[in-house]
Image (cartoon, rainbow, N blue to C red; front, side, top):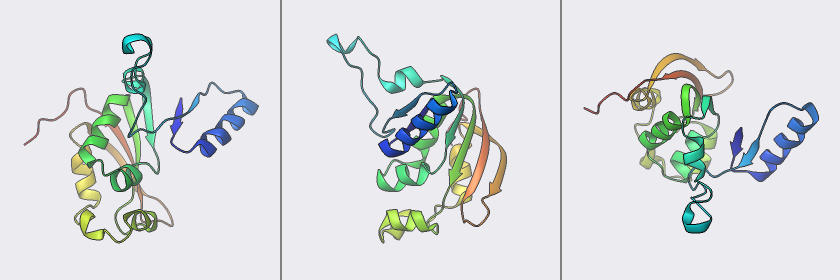
Length: 158
C-alpha cells in the first residue's frame, strides 16, 4: 500500500503499478485527517488508522515530516508516534531542517516557530519509539535520510 495526499501523485503511481502489475495499492489519504469509522453506527468500515495500525513491515515517510510539521502544525512527537503505530518493524524517514528550501517555503517567514529544530532534536524525538540504525545526508540537499527500527515498547518520557 502507498498513500499520498496528492491525487495526481497517487494517479501516476496507480498507472505505473497497473502497467508493471506489482502488488500495489495506491490510496489518496491525508494522514493528518484520515478517514473515520463509517457506515451504520460507524461500525461497517473501520477508520484508515485502525486498518493500517501495525499492518506494515516498513513505512517510508519521504517528504512527509516537514509538510505535516509545518503546514499542519502536528508536533514532531505525534509524527513519530503515528509512524510507530503504522510500522511493525522498519521506518525510513526523511528529515528537512528549517534551512531546507521547501521547509522555508512552507514556513512562509515563520522561522521563529521552528527555532531549535535540527537533526539532534529530530533524532531525540524519534528515539522514544525507534532505534536509529543509520543516517545519511542526501546528496545535493540539506536533508537527511534515516533508517530506524521500531522499539518493542516506547522509551518512557523523562
